[in-house]
Image 1 (tube, one colour):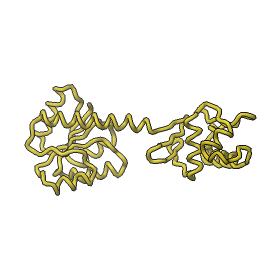
Image 2 (spheres, rainbow, N blue to C red):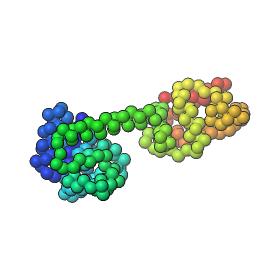
Image 3 (tube, helix red, strand yellow):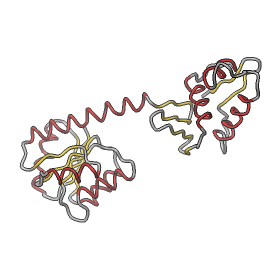
Image 4 (cartoon, rainbow, N blue to C red):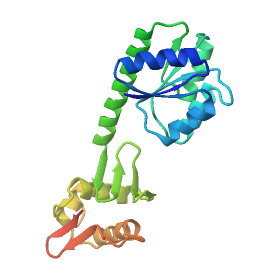
Length: 226
């Protein structure tokens, strides 16, 4: 793992660093919250270990700043204050786990390993919930669509049509299939409703783009292609 330690007590930071490096982990150290925030934004870490009380920016504020920017690296907070109220404040800020001082290094290592494992499983699940065609992405969990980093607002029906096309990327889907899957069995596949919604999608997806994604296959249907 690549781990960031944000701790103003130099001896404690060095102790943790030594133990982690002896277990073949890569470690960076910051001695205040602002320095930790800069390192966290500028690098990719598997987990972050941070103290609560630090100069310039405390651990809660640092965590909140990271979460506000959608930085979801797991954070283990070290604290001398282990009350329920303290933990409630930390969890509300976005902290993933607490370890009360003093602690044994072995417990720290076990907690970091568990955090990393859960984070890896969440990333795998997140990838399962993501449809991609070229630079177009659909997040099935948040129900958002973006192309090249630009978020695209879709109506419910446009979203359903695009999802069906993306699930069948690089394949031709007939008007009958679209009518049945996106509308209902009573929908007339010969009506111009499908064409209208295909055009709506094209305008939104291809705005400012050279590469067109949705293709009409004459006499057969439509296909979204890489």
